[in-house]
Length: 276
Ligand SMILES: NC(=O)c1ccc[n+]([C@@H]2O[C@H](COP(=O)([O-])OP(=O)(O)OC[C@H]3O[C@@H](n4cnc5c(N)ncnc54)[C@H](O)[C@@H]3O)[C@@H](O)[C@H]2O)c1
Image (cartoon, rainbow, N blue to C red):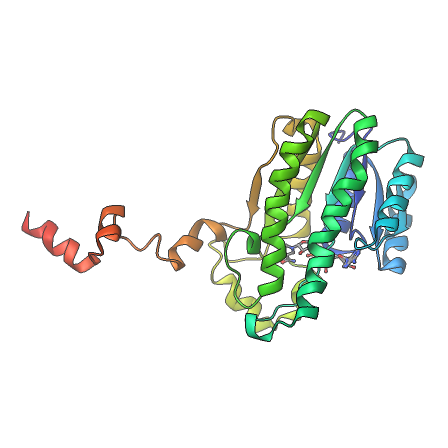
């Protein structure tokens, strides 16, 4: 219960869903948290529930001034040791149905937001002796996600930004890692119909959604000193979905790499094995 003892953590988009679970888990492990969001009523209610160790700030991640205010709130608590770039939007649309405004909206929240965030926290984190940044990407940042052009673009970008920042910030004792959740049971998925969500689960070996608490457990590990040598890593937390994703793309179709390269199909390969 003290894996984050003495640490101060800033969580963007922390009013509900995974961010709220992360705030609860951080407090349970001895941290104090600054919760930022644009959902002020929910954010304030959560901070009240969590007690003295939590404060809520109105924090739109697309605004540099809001990042400065959030960092100041952490400074007032005594420093900053962790950032969870958790805020995100998901408005799925295929390429041909995505206009520039939808694309830009995703870029602003899911990509510009974490960029501004990483920049904003560095001076105080460095002053606080170093820290850890967890960027919440998605399995949509590991492969093509059906019908989610703009979302995929930004989640891939966040994965790349994580690695670039990990290299840049290592000398400052700041670690940066990306987390890639599969379908997680939060309000974000209410944009899909229950049928669409059920169909999505067919692609998950564990045949269930993940919970916000399961993501929060991984966040606690990455923010804690237990992960002291982990930086620039990407962690899928998706019930095995990414492990089988290759099958859909032909990488796991039962043929050997040589058979795949030479274009021989399974039946021919089997027949030729029988002849030997
Ligand atoms: N739920 C899933 O299946 C799933 C899967 C993979 C990745 N993710 C990612 O996990 C993160 C958390 O999502 P969630 O599942 O808790 O969904 P959610 O919709 O419940 O939470 C997202 C939070 O971000 C906040 N937010 C949106 N725009 C913001 C802005 N401009 N500034 C500040 N806050 C803003 C929202 O108000 C909300 O509180 C997101 O980055 C999301 O893309 C979710």
